[in-house]
Amino acid sequence: GSAYNELVQLDSALYFHLRALRIFGDAGDSLRGGQTLGNLSRVYELLGEIEVADSVARQAVSYLHRAPDYPKAMALAQWSNLLLKQQRYAEAEEQGEMAMELFSRIGARSELAGLANNLGVMARDRGDAERGAYYYRLALEAAEQADDRNGATHYSINLANVLADQGRLEEALARYREALVTSRREGYGRLEEVALEGLVIALERSGRTKEALREQRTLMVLKDSLRSAERLEQLADMEVKYSTERTERELAEERASSAVQKAELERQRARNLVLAGGLGLVLLLAIGAVLVQRARARHRLQQNVIAEREKGIEAAIASAEEERRRIARELHDGVGQQLGGLRMQAERFALSEAVESSQVTGLVEAIAAAGTEVRRISHGMMPKALAEVGLVPALQDMLGHAFPEGVAEFDHHGLE
Image (tube, rainbow, N blue to C red; front, side):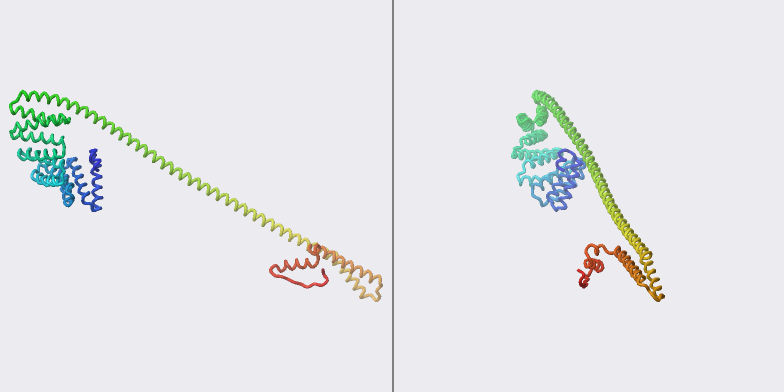
């Protein structure tokens, strides 16, 4: 806030001072809160809101009534100056006297001198030259003690003006000449001009017109010089202001460009996130598709395996059915017919009273042929294991398949 005060950016100064006041109020810091109120009062004064500034200055004094002497004296001095602007002279002098007492107590000579000079101006404006001279002398003494040469020269000129008002022209002339010497030595051009103006008037009033004319010419030359210097200073200020405005404009453009770039980066980041999300989704979909394809391939493979197994089973069943039909045909066409023939021969023998040996021999041969046919058929149905490894291993293999969860034992004799 104080920085914006210096830059005369009063709206910003007001905003930050109000924020600071809230912070100090919440923290219970009455000292800094009172000082902030003083700063606010100054802002309102610069804004031309004197009544508001006066109210805020009064609050600052109230806040700082238990504060150390210096901040309390500064608040009183500020309030006194505001009262002077409102022409409330009695109140202004009362608050100013209290402030000067505090300044004197703590040795704040420069502050004491400034306030005493303001009270002197008030007294002179009211026509109280004696009171004005008192305050100007007080201001001059304090400035000299503070080694404030500019202030001392200024207050000396003001004292000379009051002395001239009182008709004490010689004392006034002495003060003017002393102020001129100091102003020329220290380069206080504006104070030199004011001192010359007072000197010319005092010389005219004392009847020294020739000397007054000479000093008037000096004054005119000085004014021309000061005006030229002021114009140069104004040009320099304008150049600085233009440069500052240009710099601020460039900074504003740079900030705007930076904001645009930042926004573009944010948009790019958002696009990248969307793109990354999209790529991630595509990748997930691709992985899902691959997994689905693999699952389908495994399913097809399993279906093919099952189909092949079913085909094998169906083929085995068909083969077994075909084998049963073949065996049935062979039994029917071969062994069945042979057994039928044997039955018929046996019946004929039973009816015949005499049986020849040749007939018996034929019957025996027929029976042998039937047995051979049965053995042939049974050999075709014999398990592979029986043919390859023998009866005992074949029996063990058969029992192992019949009783897979247990142990089957059997006894055999003479089969090895």
